[in-house]
Image 1 (cartoon, rainbow, N blue to C red):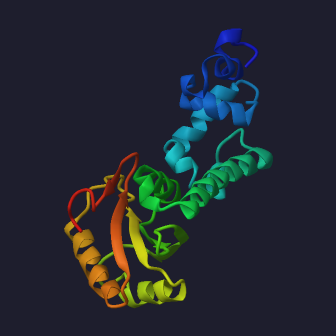
Image 2 (tube, rainbow, N blue to C red):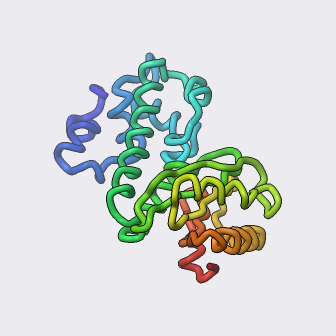
Length: 222
């Protein structure tokens, strides 16, 4: 970064103007610190983002994917994986200390960190206590999700084991389009009916796409 004018170097730019002034590649370059011969650190950072599909993909990137990006040695890969996990844990701690719907956007951000960028469809459940604070997030099913591939008895079993009072359902669309399908609606209705039998409320079903997250409750689909 020494070849850049001082006011254009990411670190100096951040200190002078705040983190929001940095482009995605510049922000990531601060973590990577160095590039390699013939390729500056900002360019390497852009290569990482291109390979992962942006920050959403990066926070869920498998170690094998990062290993294929030139310029990322073991130390840099470890740092990126650690930062992604820190972000997930920070949001989880916030959701465990206050009712999740005190800040609905935080729920979306947390689920986006967990599910965006996955190459396989994943069905997850946020199990909540009586005050709607987070008890645990569990990924229960993977693959193509239908009414028959997500087993209500497994969701009920975990809700009872955790003594949950409510849940938020969530899944991703690897295609990147977050619009709920008719199958998503049927699945939600099935789980609502099953969980109602054990007095557990379904508060929402969140669909995570690429850069877009949809709340079925906000759409009036619950």
